[in-house]
Length: 346
Ligand SMILES: Cc1ncc(COP(=O)(O)O)c(C=O)c1O
Image (cartoon, rainbow, N blue to C red; front, side, top):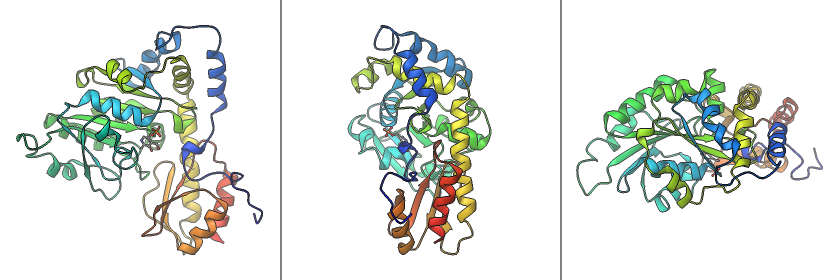
């Protein structure tokens, strides 16, 4: 351990640090045979509605994009009037980690709501919705966006999503889900993907693939066609239309045609669970969020954080409180967790 070289140890910083799953690489190689039409006119993209339909219901319509920020920006634009606002959590990726793209590129005002655990509720959203839609001086709330699993590693139950969908629809709004880690949520809940999306009233989903084994590629999944307008045009206008779309689509098929999406997500979640179990009782470690998916949040004394960072990459989440984020992925192994835990214990 003393002769640590950066890059040699497993990263606990992000599930984006993981490589490409071999089955996805094989799918990319297979998709490399011959010429096919561009911009989604290929046989791989032609299969997407059917493949996603098995998970999200036959009304699902799939629009592959390059990345999650693009999925959020294009999806929200298609859902909201230009003058409306989008209610989100204060810790959401759209609010914190997209350089203001929803506001600058989509032109939609974000209304961030403080939450204890990254989860929006009707009660928390209500003060930002009621009375904000009937005066031209306000940007009327048009969309609620939630993240599943959340940026704090917590997971909404189907009932919690349904309550938000009913609240949104009852106030003339739509419900968007940032599902960058939607597979981890399904694995955590041990439920089919549609149980807490389509069947719980979500209108549009940003489906995440990159953190779960793809090289790159996400998809906007329209679950309620009445909730969007102009998605085809908006995807092009926002530079998210891949000319060689077959390579994004082939990856998404590799993930969802069989059970790769679930195997990878279950593995990442179980590594986070094992890590949390191993450090939970250490006197200098305090877990700060329930560990429900593939993230572990904890506070550590600064000296331990400094020492750990000599050996491992991870995110200092809140330097003011000493909170850190440890993320597991489909590439994290039990040995990685054991060695990481040993370093934390020391
Ligand atoms: C919650 C969430 N949404 C969306 C994204 C997608 O971001 P990117 O544009 O980097 O693919 C991420 C990536 O970290 C994320 O954590």
